[in-house]
Structure formats: structure tokens, C-alpha cells
Figure (cartoon, rainbow, N blue to C red):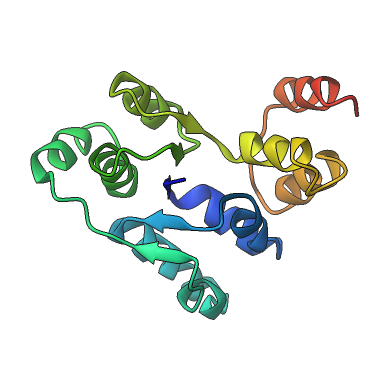
Length: 160
């Protein structure tokens, strides 16, 4: 399974000490260089990201379609643009992306997407976690924004 990721899933799970959940679920993820650079920014806030840098299951690959990246970058940030272009080029099975505009653009290009909440519900369905609520609460406590209505809807759909 080819999984490309934008920044949010990796940085959010890293900040709560649960980065390994991505490896457990997907075995390997691929990041474009701009996303990796965004993750390096965590060091400016005192985070030791050596676990990200040294993870053999996280690979960095360049997208070659610069015209598509340039086109996407008119409305999206560079990390999202590179992630979408790379997902298209590699015919990825899944793109992890949370930003609404990015997901819409990816879907227009025929790329399957999910966000961090989707990853968490997949982890529960696969039996890797018992409940989504503790993880969602941890994420919310570190600044991951989930609208209260959506949060309640997720918990209800998961029987929590």
C-alpha cells in the first residue's frame, strides 16, 4: 500500500508520542520534501525530532510534476501541493491530508484521502486501539482542532 502524508498526521501524532501508530497501520509512509521541511520546524519549538528523521519506515521522495505543484501552490501551501502531486505520480492508495481545500483538490484528481481522524477510526476498526476518544482528547489538548459537533459525531459513530 502506497501512503503519502501531508504534515498534520505525522506532526500531531509525534507531539503526543504516538507516531508509531502510523507505522502500525500503514507500515510505511512517504513524505514530499516540503512536508519533511515543515516537520523540521518542530525543532524550533524544542522538539527532538530524531525519531522522525531516523524512522526507516518514513521515506522522503520528490514529485517530478513541477507544473502541477506550481498550479496547486496557487491555492494550497507547498507541502500540500507536493503531497498531492506525489500521490498522483505514485498512484498512491491513500493521501493523508486534513486541510479541506487540499482534500477537495486531491479528490478532484482521483486521489483517495483521509485525515487524522480517519486514521484514528481505522486504527480502532483494525483493533490497534480500543477507543478513539482518548486519542482525540490528547490531540485536542495539543492544539489539533476538531469542531465540537464533529467530535461528538465521531464518538457517536464509534459507540463511545
